[in-house]
Image (cartoon, rainbow, N blue to C red):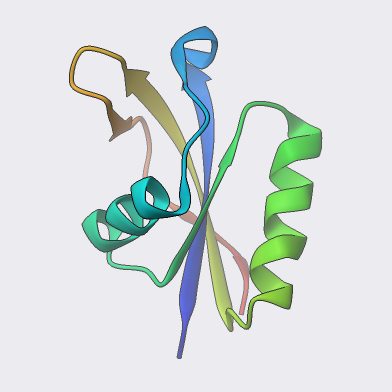
Length: 85
């Protein structure tokens, strides 16, 4: 089963750079999923959810994260919640 995750940036939204496919692939590996979508707003989260479904993800998780620009990484603020699957 392919899993995807929507990362909702709750802290550090203004510092998140545009992520390339390679950057998102690295983030996916670190979270143990096949696909990642980064969201800065509720609309972005909904779009990311649909995007992951169309890319073949059978299970989609949602997690609030903080972006740290000095380390260029995401830190979980809460446990992931299952949105789909």
